[in-house]
Length: 269
Image (cartoon, rainbow, N blue to C red; front, side, top):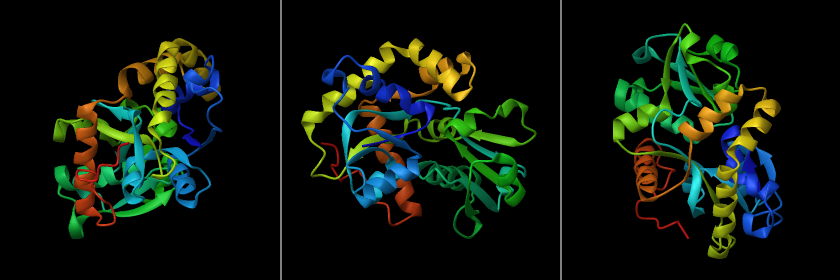
């Protein structure tokens, strides 16, 4: 099973790694870590049966998801940043974090709907490793996600910066879901759902342990880790989160006909 290597995944897997037993997911799964795009590729290739999958890849691969947990936001998320050295309406090239797929589509949606950058005016996308200076050296704007975005202080940058989680919520009034536990139909069983839910709840109950551990492991200030995990990311998902997920996939499918909308797909177990 593949989990995303970013900070925002840690509460989801904390029970699997540190819980008291199978009821918390500990010992239930063979867990490994990778970038979001790599997790999706491992599912596609069959190297992993289940993973924390970017929702855009869940739709493309027609995967089923385990309900109840995931990675979402209800406002500014802090870890999905579009940074532009030119006025936003003048972006012609966008360097995207090579670890991202859902956030790339989110950037395209927001640039199209809010700034009119659609069709022939849509920016050309180039995929690059997550290094802001290099990315802006090659493109008008850069998209950073995950830990790389958390290492940037938007208020200190001399560039225009958009928090794409906040922009989505402002445009739609709905939450943004970035990733869910998902896999192919034959391996996604309702009997496993409790393990994902309990692992997440174990992590949320031990958030201060996570803050202490991850601030050292990732060289982040404790205050940043705590604020991010408790105020920016939503881990337990409800009906409104899934409405946001469907709305996102509907908009994404309008930009890319390889994306199947979940609005009528029924892909939750």
